[in-house]
Image 1 (cartoon, one colour):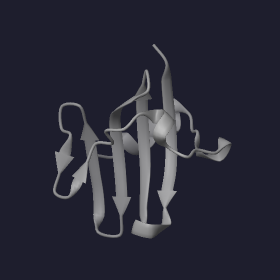
Image 2 (cartoon, one colour):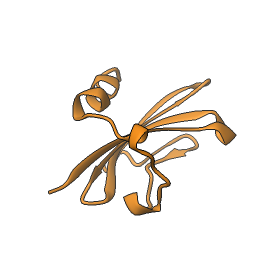
Image 3 (cartoon, one colour):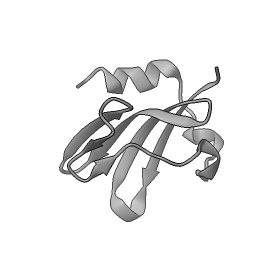
Length: 80
């Protein structure tokens, strides 16, 4: 099982995403906006206007700086 952790900011929507992928599929996500935070997972894939990322990891235009550690992801995830 391959796990990948990503932190990506989208300027267009002023959203910071933390994503946890297993085998190329998003299984957990934290979405941080000026309005608040959404914690999404396979068990809770949608909240208000936020939805768990449903594309492949390969669909993202990622740079080396976008990859984070498991510890960094779970430090944010555990704030819920």
